Length: 88
Image (cartoon, rainbow, N blue to C red; front, side):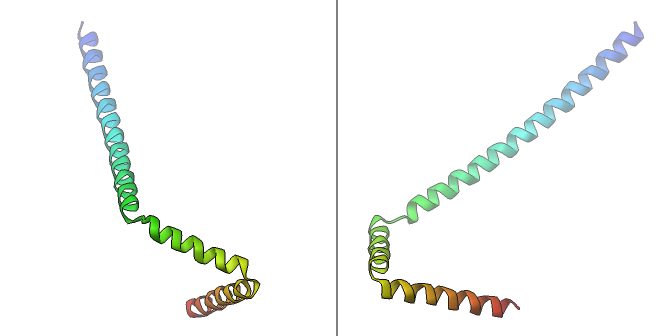
């Protein structure tokens, strides 16, 4: 009889520990989802269709003009080299 009571309390304690662990994991997941939602909302607020259209037009100008394409890649290469040298 005492052994059954002892087992009952041991099982009850184990269930409580597992329940708390599960709740902590759920809380972590909810926090991560909340952070992702906040980030998505922030990104949606800052996205402007006019700026995106202007960016696409500028990129189209660069792609259509070979001289601009060469100049663009030279600039990117120079900036990458300068940044690499600054890091060293």
